[in-house]
Image (cartoon, rainbow over all chains, first blue to last red):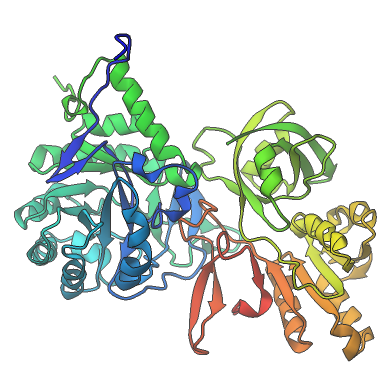
Length: 311
Length: 266
């Protein structure tokens, strides 16, 4: 072994029993089922992939237009278009199994029964490593966000999924609430293993010439650099109010953004909108984090977690 | 991927041609495919934009040309860029036109900036010995582009403008209507249609194609975030196997070229 070899730093993290080789995951709805990105890099370099939100039955999604750009951000109103849990298991999971990374299945339902039915169907499946429960999509009328804006409803849905799954259970929180910590505590009490903070912020944009909304659904979810300060504040608040490990999400475009989230208490991060700008974003961010740790002689990324100096 | 600008020229009032050095895309790219382009590494404007590959034979080796209209912030920023500067691109993306089943004659109908993706198509049709006409339309004479380029390929060009300032008054689909009237049933059987342009023009062409049973491929446009299939933002409504039902297909992945009879226009 060459003695001048650069000292390696440890990037491995553990989130509620889920062991990740590094803290970089790709966010649900921004990475499809991985196939489109496999042409650009080895998916095995990622800590994990959170697949596009799945429902019990295939879902068509919202009418177009579904995308609008806003200052340093974008609105989307996809409406959780997806192929349904059965086709995912049959057609997508075998491909994802080939990669040395962790697969988290994002699930949503229109009722508590639907959430539990999906969790039950996934239970024990080879190639699945965790479940992310979406109680925060702003683009579906029934379900979605309804479960994420009332602590009692959050408790019910998380408890129901908990009963059906032995996988690490992550709950993805909505920022469209008065007090995110109340929802976080409800999820913790109901048996969640970790929390993803945050989903998109409800927003809208208008064409003043036609006086029509820019989205077919009128409103949509705002993501991108514009929401990063809000996301960071929420991660910091939730970090102080629950014991659960957190996954930070919201406008992470480069390594320094990801590091901010980790310093504010996130154990890992999800890369979302940045995947749309450059398919290599997630791996570039990973490289940037590693460089930062080496430059600052931090041997283990866990030492950085929650290290915000407020005194 | 970084691509260096080799040339960036104004071609008429609001239209520009940019030549980009990108050997890999030039090697793989075919007619009707596109690339996603970002002007810089900043986050405002945030999303990449889709541009059709216009030409792959330029005066510079290993480079391609895109034809663009300054319509928003991104294209305005592009128009200020100088040769030697770099921007980010990925591609080639989308399915492209299929010329394998083309009949003996092809009519290409293009409206406005819709001529951008069909030049490579005309080249490919020429190579396949398909006799090709171009019906090209625009708002006014300033919006009629690339006529000489097509003519030098041996393509016969007919022109229309919305204001009548050049050629026939009306959309390019009107030229197709006139053409079909003059042809007999047998000669129509030898014709395939290809189109790119505004929604109303495509819809009108799809209607004509259906009435006269002409095969017709159209290149669609939609607001995109990623251009590579991940965001599911750029969908169009398409027919489903059940007549009363419909589905959504991604312009960037299942398209951007669709058979006109797949699309639900309402």
